[in-house]
Image 1 (cartoon, rainbow, N blue to C red):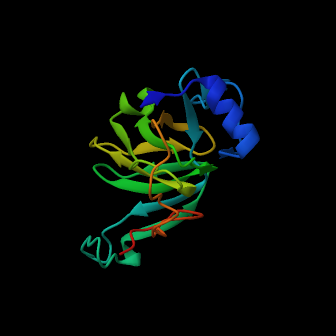
Image 2: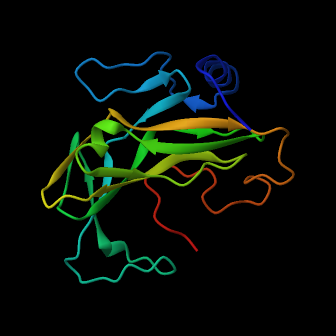
Length: 184
């Protein structure tokens, strides 16, 4: 398995619509950077957020997730309460090739502020907007800026296409649009 370069990412994005919309060069003009980098793609966070709240004293249960555990906000700046988290999504829509696994790492700008971005791997054949989790590990409120960089995706190409892809097994998060809550 090898990590793919900017050249490969650009070709797949433009020819196969692997990333839409696609930004061909790193943008850094007074914002948290996003776009194509040497061996990855820095995705942006959209302006749709689900901010965790405990107003209704709900229990977090991945098998029966309470919709009232979050408040929805459409905003340019999301404020995450201390020691809490928010869900969001990427601006970009991803289509993962059958012979590629994509992993995600948080941006150092957020990490240095105690804000952790978590995303599970994007499996071969998966497509959709990526749901992002921002955890505020600090005792202070934290800001997340919409339409700016949130995380970096790394593309690992396998030695051959997988036998059964995410699409083949009709994965439950296939084709997701918007911020997607846990499904069973």
